Length: 165
Image 1 (cartoon, rainbow, N blue to C red):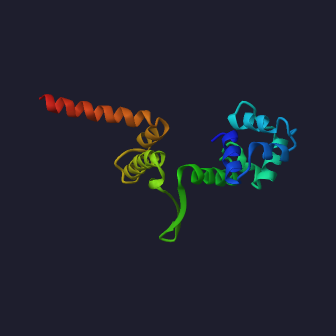
Image 2 (cartoon, rainbow, N blue to C red):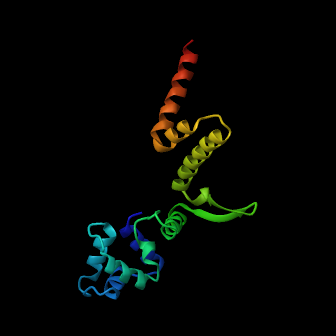
Image 3 (tube, one colour):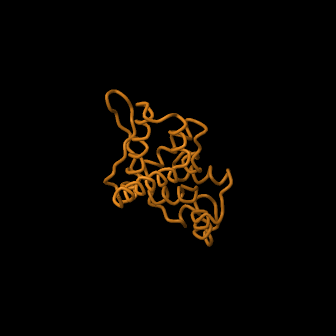
């Protein structure tokens, strides 16, 4: 999720209008909503000082507004928070281990993501069980979804050949 989408999401979560947030960060009242709409639409990108002001008014950490940064633990945590907000990820505990699960009842996007994560889980299990090599597992991960589509086509071709015999 881009920074503009994050600003809009959190602004709406806080029940603020574009005009209110725009004036609160110092834009002239006359153009505050237009300026904020430009940032939310991605036609303008806020500089660091504006991100700080927006974060202060929205009462969030500036990292929560920024494009996901997984190069630090804090950035990774905020990325996970975005996944919770958008896709229904839930933090949970299973057998004394912290885990992340997906609420597949959250809508069609979550169902599709559930299918994708299930495919990943199956490939990871094949790798752990020695059914595929590390190279095969990496090929699947780094070319997903193309690799999965290719394998599906190959399976369909095999089935068609069998039916034609």
